[in-house]
Length: 187
Image (cartoon, rainbow, N blue to C red; front, top):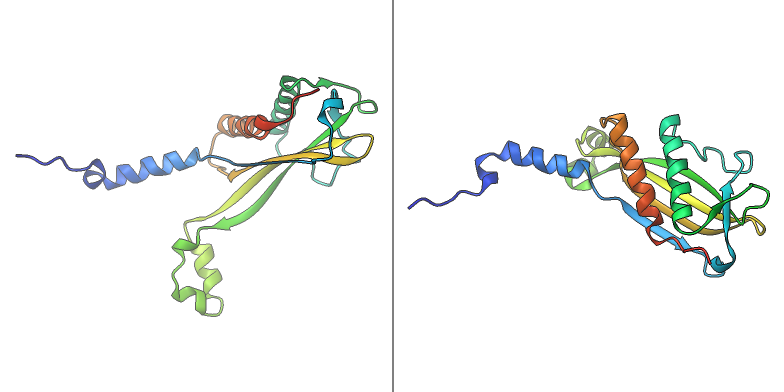
């Protein structure tokens, strides 16, 4: 009688590659917050906040092609939720986005001994194969007349610079769709 061996005991390297490939398409951590005082029933139109009025670094990811795709995807989502594009001076809502980037690591891979020696913790941390950059795409929606933030959505995930341009654009589009999943519908 032959006992079936679990696939990962036969080919551990193949299983590890499959796990790493799956983590490359990792889920986003999505958050959305709405100002409870905002009356979305009265909003009908949107426009992009003028760059001069936005925070420094807004409306750019550092890659024009990805920026253009994010603009297009956000506009599409706003229209899907019943909002119409308008002129900046007349729009009910103004939009802006930013990409935040921060260095992260998985503590589980840093040995306990390294944490207690002066400087060794940082050396071990930066040598860890699980040190990575995390990117957060944040979208702000502002009531133009009150200059008040009424909604903020974000999607965060590992940045995967080894991905092709096409895959990075797809991830940006996926992030926008997930951010707007629970956006209020126009009144």
